[in-house]
Image 1 (cartoon, rainbow, N blue to C red):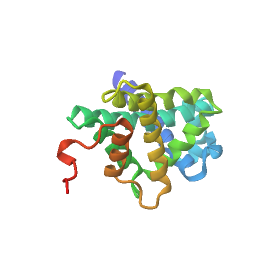
Image 2: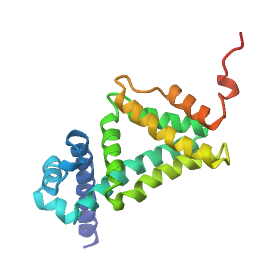
Image 3: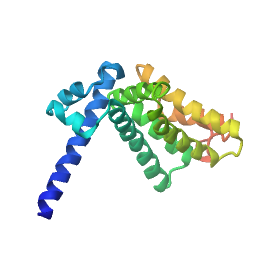
Image 4: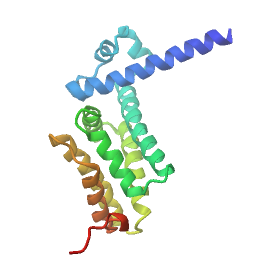
Length: 196
């Protein structure tokens, strides 16, 4: 009996994950306004009733999609930090990797659209704050100045938007340089340019 329950649970978790991924694809391709239970189920090649079964409201579906995307960034940044990466370089790397053309660019576009939707849907705001808080935590490793911390959060979000709009993206080096500038840290000694 336990194996049957575990099997159903695993299938349910897979279906839920498929619906969340489908939601991000619908938002990236068609915009958040086109997200319906039916559209998401169709995108996931699932029965129409499955989206309603797992997500009673559209807000539940949108929150789950934005949460999944945010948690992916949080996980990647934490892995880089735990791996010994210098914090600003780790943040620049995660931002650049997510926005790389041919990479996760469409997903970043979907995240931006959902983040903007948070202005109208309060249920999305805590998820947006989670990412901003993590960027602020990285900034606080370099400064206690609250204005510099806010500037770093704004720069990280602005760089991501710039990368989505740019045909060639924004490189990790460029992102890291801007973040260092905002935080007043300059380049690490190993990366400092040679004096003429």
